[in-house]
Image 1 (cartoon, rainbow, N blue to C red):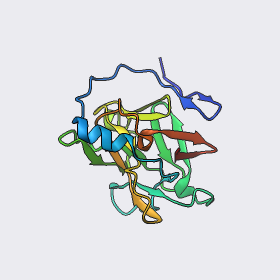
Image 2: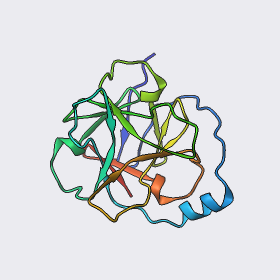
Image 3: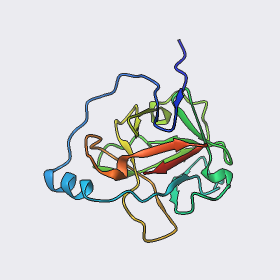
Length: 169
């Protein structure tokens, strides 16, 4: 049975999937992340389609109509409208925070390309890591990350999906 994305207002999309248990962050790390405010930045492909895997970014100006900021969420994948690349965890679970990527071959069945969107969090099926804004709002475009401790209350891990954009609250 295919698991389709369902949009419920702007709150969440649910795909339903069993997730692997996560290791927890250190107390100091979790406390530091919990005190950071959301950036308000939107997930951005950067428009780069020169390689099979490229870094994912966050962009300050969510009012832009660029396809680089537009995403289609379906069957557990998050696909960029402009490049056709899908959000990719990269499979790295060696550190508490790792870079987020975009991958050209969205036909791959890898869990690295599968996501569960629940209660404002975007969690990777393969690694169990959640999309993380990193809290950096010092530049107009910053790297997107994935964070191990999805139980953190940090606003960096909270996202709103509306009108094709994925925005850090």
